[in-house]
Length: 569
Image (cartoon, rainbow, N blue to C red; front, top):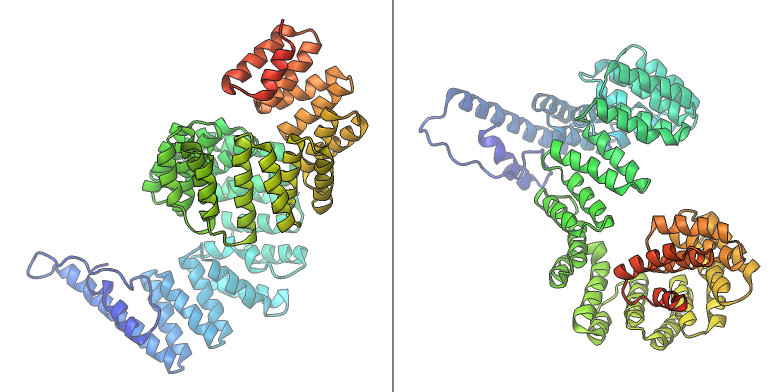
């Protein structure tokens, strides 16, 4: 709409000290060129002016305690103008006056006008629970449904509205009763959700299928069907999504869900293709662009990541700080260190400390270790966790410079200052191995295990060290097995498991786990171990091939050079 709608309410409500509807605070449009407005424009302006004065009248009525009159005006205006902000004002006015019946009606209207309104869902759920019994709540919802001009949002939120009632089987029965008069896809969807919550996946499946049969291509129902499959047959989720997007090429939300599922299965390239397809089909989708950037980073396609993050920025991604971090990482991967620092300097809020630590690392890389440490020492850490992260990064800089004794000494001092930090204990244990203090390593890692019994890497680090540096192989195997149970897909734990089997003389099992580890992550130390086992098994050419390939990617790596020198022809 045009005319006075854009500025009068904002000024008037500012004087009243009240929040206004969606038009408030908008700039005035440019003045029309013609001397006289067109008839339709004049008519629209008149309608808007009337609506604005009615809104002000409702505000005055609310201030004077005429809640019923105010809400009546708000609701009529909200329906006529399809403005959820006015409906929200009606809800707030009713709640403030403790007029819970009108509040329920207004919240229902708000949900009609804005199906994504969390406020409407929460208020409806709270007010219905306040009735004290599911039967009364069901009757109230039935009344709301019968009067609603658009029932779809209410039907889709039935389970949410009745979520506070503990008997989920009774809620399912109530949802069946409420949806029975309305034979639409949204009703079947509502029953499916209630059945899923009630622990009846077969009913949930049949109802979701019915909803999809009534509305083929309905993405919300497809996502619900996938949620049900995740409980019944998780291996079928990806195939289901794939078949759905094959039949509904424009189903962008489902395609993004498919991308997330593929990423969760470590199928990074396939996941990126799905998000790229969303970018093509839904122009200016910043979420898809950001996802392409993240996945490109994982694929070490830094140029592709940079381009995707820049698109996300242009498309106004909702969390620009996250994009700045991504752009910094992409520039770092491209060895554009000054540009990376510029991006990291733009990061604020919760990610500020992470960005500062990245800058310190790059300063050390470009200007030397003393400059990097100096930058770290000038970071004003805001919390104990931040302080610990700063210490960890400084230790990493020292490790990168192979300053093993200084690393150990610095971390020992840090452990004295923060004795309850399992992170610092773990880091000191790793430094202790470098200065041949295996007694400290074992003591620190056993403390970590006691503090965090589910920390797989502590079991793994201790188990690997015992396997590699001692003859306590049975104990090492037990520790690594524990780590494997906690994190069976971790390539470094798989590497340790392969290595302890090798030390126990079981080369076939060693080879099996080392090959799995290396296929998951082509780490130089894993390559060194795999080549060692292959060499021992007489496969000298294959071992040399793996070592040489790893050395090209990691020139100067100590473990690789040591094993290659050991087995020189």
